[in-house]
Length: 136
Length: 241
Image (cartoon, rainbow over all chains, first blue to last red):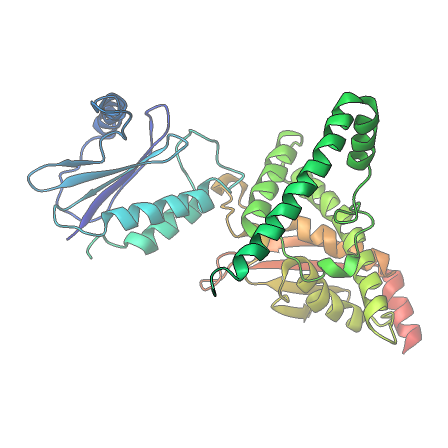
């Protein structure tokens, strides 16, 4: 029951925010995070065309042996990725709340440039209070 | 027989409606045959605001007294205002001055509306003449009219007798704004300062109003609106005593 990490990927596939919470996953270099985010963006785009009957969303959950990635795609193409432990039941609601905070603290902040890395104290502190140390 | 009782009635209603339709349809077809006349009519009715939708200037101002604007929509608008202004200025002081000017334009209108409403609603509308009551009015009524709640404190400077401070612990317009570190002096509440300056000017209490960030641990967005009154105001205040 833990939240390991939160990413925000912009609509071009660039990683604009990455923050780790609980220990449990090995830290990657920032370059590796960027590559992983870009790859995930591509996978998401292709999986959305995979459905045999009509249109479908892209991949929403990717599971490993000790973690799972929960992906929320917004209508504007921004993706929120939450890496949690396998049994974490809160991932969906946390992702929705992250989206709420993003809409408030990032999009309504005049000093944020769209599609650029998020450097906003308000976002940081509100994510901090939402997820805390990552242990639920 | 209970069933047959309403049935003929229904049929009567349907008959009448049917006949009315029959009655209407020739007129409509005749209208279609004469396109110029109905089109003239319809153009008149569309250009004229109907009785249900009066012109915005004709709407009663008191009806919107308790109307509220979506805080989210305003936050987006204000964010765009700041971005627009930021592109057209050089430096933080310039940006604050521009925001102040924009707020001033809002303040003159807000004061006019507040005074108008006060005159309409109270039997003995009163114009504030004393400095303290004017400041109290700004602190409570103006804040309520503009932000929906009163400001948190009104203080007098210890060092300078011509300086007063209105303190807002969590200013509505800055709720979603995080100022980057390299612009940390910037206070977007300069907009509010402009509103206050306009209200004071309008009541003949000319002053220079600025805004400053005074964060505390509990209220990271706490903002002080500093009012520096002109000399003439204090001199007049002495005479009124």
